[in-house]
Image 1: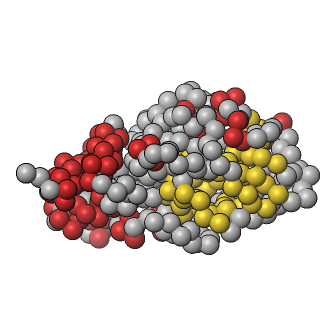
Image 2: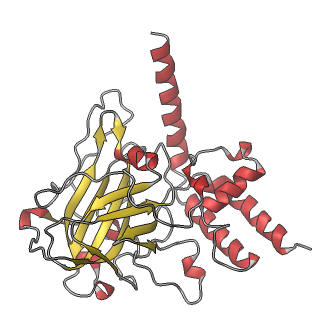
Image 3: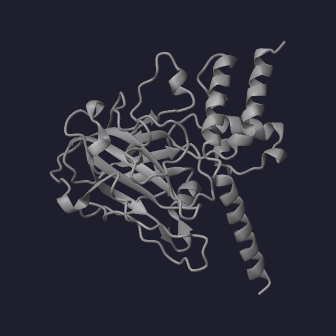
Length: 335
């Protein structure tokens, strides 16, 4: 007969081959000197009561693939409000703490905001007009996503110092370009009350619709020998003084994220030891689950497995990218 511990171990073993291909989502946010948990898709839906967050719901750690879908704004289900709102002053920093991110899922990172025109807890983001506050792409041979990884999976944005006080949704996004001709979008939206004495509002030319901003964008094949540069999609950052965001370390969020997430996510399951399986489970919120029973942990594991399976398209591209980098490295050594 299974004990609770053996049942938990069995569930982890079942999902281990899938979880090594996991992507990421915003696990927590640092705003106004406080740390707020993000929406945790593999545990929060199973809580009773379901916890209120400042971050709008995401279904899993998978991508949005259709640039014309309304899901590209705040992820699937993210058009609906979250229950809480964070408070931060204009000119202060916002730190987006991603649970993890695969090293080969290279691409740009950007942050947008939109006014809720009232309480964000009743604001539908479906038809919002967004303004960009920062973006970074490809510079000096390095992608913004790699910069995010180097800085502990964190992205730091600055609220424009002159922004008019009010309620806003702030949107952080990574676009993964590892799969040629099929960009993957990973947006996350949080609700924010901005304080201060600013008077600035974005002009009409600085406002864009999402979906809409990526409709006519042709993303490059980043593995092509002809790839040299990348133009960041969308408008320039709004207001003077705004600019590129940063993977630079801000105030370290006091999240429950395991330090094990700093390891890369493409370890082959065949080579994974029992310790590595445990590490993978922690990085997908199995062992850090706030559930108190093995049954709940199994439920979380099954949800993780399903989400990872839905993004299995990344496997072949990951192999291709690693082989190409290896061949390039050997060629350089023997020139």
